[in-house]
Image (cartoon, rainbow, N blue to C red; front, top):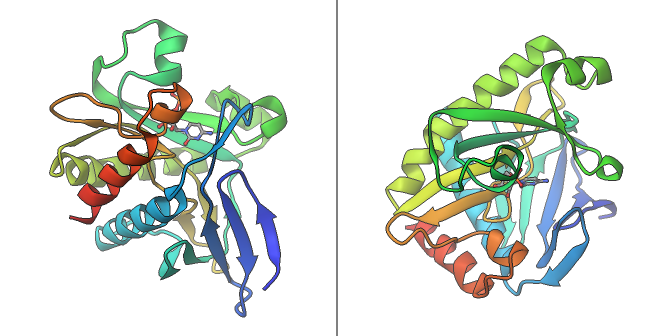
Length: 232
Ligand code: C5P
């Protein structure tokens, strides 16, 4: 079946059903808007399995997602979505660009989670948007922004304890949403060590893509550790 789209970490293929697509998870990793590239052996298999587990868990907790079934170790069958042109980031602890933007030390806890919206636009480097910018761009209505915020917070409430029970702190993560053929808003894309910051609860060790971004070493081992704990 023909390729519809190739992204940095995934390929999307047509299926016999026009309302469904197959997503193949690659081992390619990129960071800093594609400036840094590498292969992380086995990453695609980890991310497909972790996404399958987490989306199953979310669906069991009443969250609508695009996930239908895992076809093989790298391929998921999902609903075809028309994507909202925003990335939604949820933060429980200060890290990454929030640390850079505010100077607040990494690892500072926050009383309430923070939600941020980023414009899905590679040419612009996915800039941070406030709600006035979103309205100016017509990227989402105020109602949709409110729904995305509410949905992201619900997902956070379901995922935080899931990870904590496995000795992992969910520091922050990125979500993408879209509409299926029936017009239902669903969680799309993936949730994996590529799209989350996951810290070991006792040692603080980074078990996510920051190992690649920051050249911390033992990248494959960290992904395998997350796979092991998430499947338990
Ligand atoms: O870099 P920053 O601190 O803004 O990232 C916040 C979270 O969103 C991190 O978990 C990161 O992995 C994720 N993210 C992502 N894709 C992007 C930008 C951020 O998965 N394009």
